[in-house]
Length: 265
Image 1 (cartoon, rainbow, N blue to C red):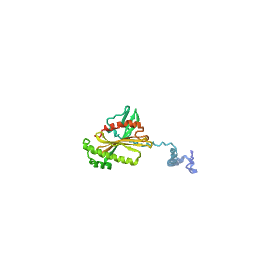
Image 2 (cartoon, one colour):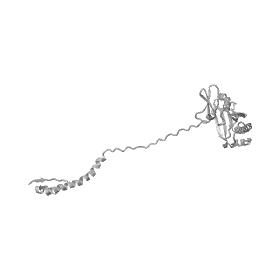
Image 3 (tube, rainbow, N blue to C red):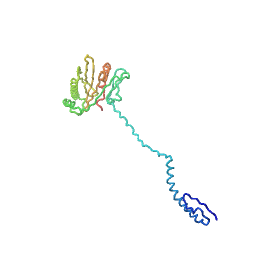
Image 4 (tube, one colour):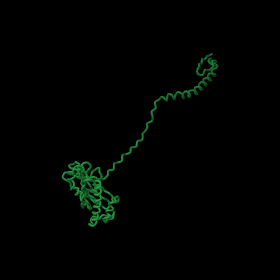
């Protein structure tokens, strides 16, 4: 008789199964089958508890994130066209001086001496539809506001000059109320391009009879707009800060005004 000694601590089989003779081989096979079935049941359960702990310890590589970046281009700076570029005609200046539209100022004409800035001339363009006072002067002179210009008609030129002189008189009246020690220049009839115009201005004196401010201007009208061309001397706020430069430039301003391309075609 052959004897098999079987130890199974896990299943804790009854003690009487420890000694099995060869005749009980069939019973032994039944036990082996039972053990295999039990292992098939418990192995997946153990894997469920232990394998996650192992896999959780593995380093995980996060998926790369793609940031959506949208670059909004800066708006291009809009450069305002200088009014002088449209109307500036032939210019005459002292030797070594230059006259050009200022690159960054839409209303200024830059004056330089040997490349060094010495002053500016400003142009204001004002629609007459927004100027009720000048409309009254046009009507009083016999020119309906908004009517086409007749720059070659002597009668029209006389009427327009009358309206412009009335406008200058208003300016002088306002100046007298707000300034002291002021002397005004008599308005003079001039040509501004092909249009009739008026030259005017004033000098303000200091208490010591020195020149505090000097102002020269030209004004004309093209049927829809007033053109006011002016420059000045004042030691701190004038278009020219040195009186000698202002005095040297004055005669040339009249020539520049006379050669302007007005009216604009």
